[in-house]
Image (cartoon, rainbow over all chains, first blue to last red; front, side, top):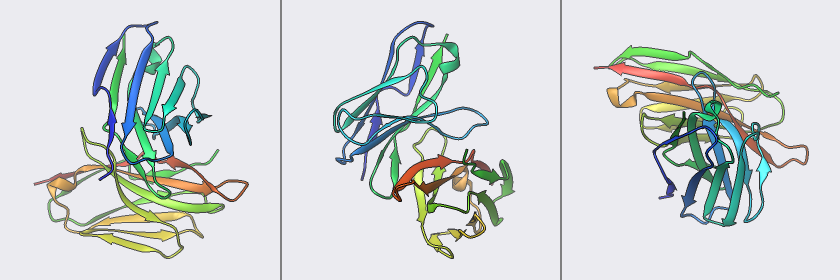
Length: 110
Length: 116
């Protein structure tokens, strides 16, 4: 079974803090993704990566950056957290046909 | 901007009822349509990946149909059970200009609650 893990289920941070969300997959997938999910909105793509050290902006990259130093790990970075980044963050990795999701990190920025 | 619409937004049914929901997506540059089930406090779980017009897929009591020409897919649940309570997401994958697969574009989901 594909396993995608995320470093925290719940996280509370203060405005202005630097925040790291970590995601690890164990299936040697090349493609990895970060989404956020907000009430009344669908999953929205923040960034994705199709190989080590490669990254592409998704639909809502502003205020975020990513890092992919190893194939299995894809990190989402909030350089200076703001209250409008309070959300559920989902990581996914992808075989050619299917995306496999992690359990999500619910981030609250105070 | 590509739009993926799901209806209804939420649904409350009694155990044993059969139900269905709709996903509407662009009818051009179609590559695939995905359905996911997302239970509270769990990861979204892939249900179906559908690629051909007229496709029908089935997994236990859950089935899905696909019409790429008119841009819709139906998800059916026969004899709903409380454990079917979840948010059901559909996601459209289009073709890029180069003909390869684009990223998934998700609908907002249909939240199903099944009362015992």
